[in-house]
Image 1 (cartoon, one colour):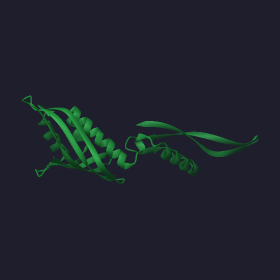
Image 2: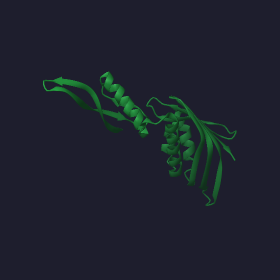
Image 3: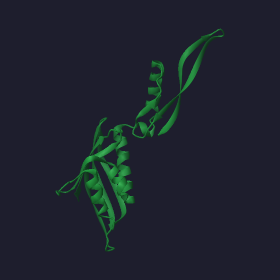
Image 4: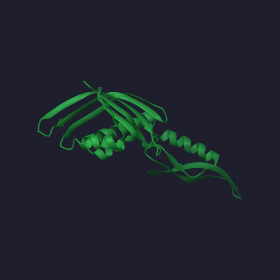
Length: 186
């Protein structure tokens, strides 16, 4: 969790020497899924804090479309690293994965087991590029293209690619998770 100190004018204090404008430093924590954790401020302070946070556009406060695009890039990096634990963690518990018209694999644990069956393969390159992303606060849809170069257990290298479609949801920890991922050969 990243911590940002926000300096905001909160009130005018009158003292025997006249009015003095005070600045108060309040701590606000913003996590990478955009959740804001802060101490209670007076209503004027809240308005100023929300205005500052909206203007700053830190990575943790991205619009949903950008946050989903970042989650997709984490997925791509995990694919390149062949980190099956990280890949499976990006799926919702009840997720499903399918390729062309094949039988879907359902559930994060089943997806992990499926990925583990490719341990003897080596991903050389992996790119996934969304051509469209639409999102609201709880759901997102993406479509685009993917391409990968893989060395097979026999030593031969193949290059495959095609289109993908993904549905995302926000989980109880406010993280984007893939609910459904479908790929279609080129």
